[in-house]
Image (cartoon, rainbow, N blue to C red):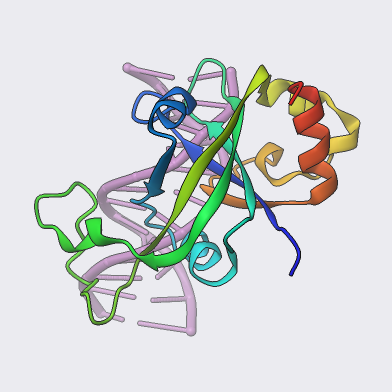
Length: 154
DNA sequence: GCCAACGTTGGC
DNA sequence: GCCAACGTTGGC
């Protein structure tokens, strides 16, 4: 079984790489998009590596690396009426939404901005740099992952 | 804060 | 099953 690579977005004002560094581990809840849900439910495996991407940030870009430490399971925030991500259509016996657990691996010594990613010809075609790509969980090829990791000095 | 691009919902 | 309306994402 080969390691797969991912990019996962979070707004640093709500949860940043520094928060994960402090917490060591967290659950990636609140994803309410079917395509992103399917990646977490069907494809993410324990041991996969993912970029922690700061979205809606100044600047936006890749801040660090984490490891998937628990594969997809029911997102319990969908069951809680008080939660921001509550969804009455998702019930425990037939959960609609899924989350994974991630653990901190490293904060990149150098932040890799979206602008740098777009500028690097070796990264052409990477999903995060495509116009209008709003998907919050994206697959990343091994080659692209290693290039960005190197750009970040990781 | 703006707004283009997108995903989802719901009327028909 | 179409598609307009709506809500959200996220770069700028």
